[in-house]
Image 1: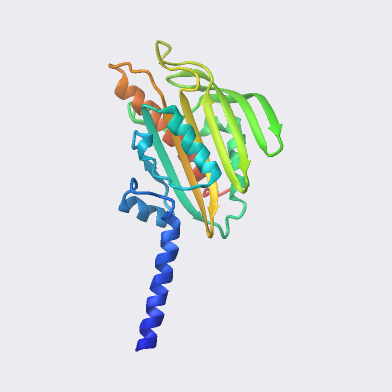
Image 2: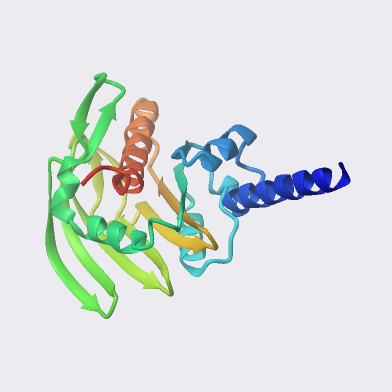
Length: 246
């Protein structure tokens, strides 16, 4: 009986340790229910609205760079997207996601759910590369995309390999207007990023985006919904993309 108890206790401890490793990078700002979803391999989307409540807590260089970028932005609107995947069977995950992120023309196919119109639209009507610079494994691009209701937007895109981790960031480099009438943010006022890094037997996939938007009081709710849902749609799309059948 003692041997049986010892074996049972050991198994339970190993299970607990394995489960803890999947969420060990997340702090008090993520709920117990969301932690369980992460353990189950689900994509978790958080709309905390404040970078002071960023849920990721790690010293991984790619992740720290993303977090610091978001904190420096001090966005009025902010959202996070998270998934944990096993390393086994996904050994080439970084390369897969990197290739998807570099397929700029494919951004036009990203689905976006409009709360206002209660239907799906393409996140971008079109997207194209204006220039590209390859610096070893790091790539800088300037792109243009049409994103209703904000119109044509110029963006700076950075894709970097930091050690074995992947870092991606895009920032608008033009002013953004709501329906061609009201300026809602200046250049570099909207940023969205994705990092992928390994922790033992797991990959941590984390996306975050924010907007330092100007306040147009009678449009605030509409603008917030437009920005936040687009950030969620973009980051969740690429995190989910590797699970889709080829």
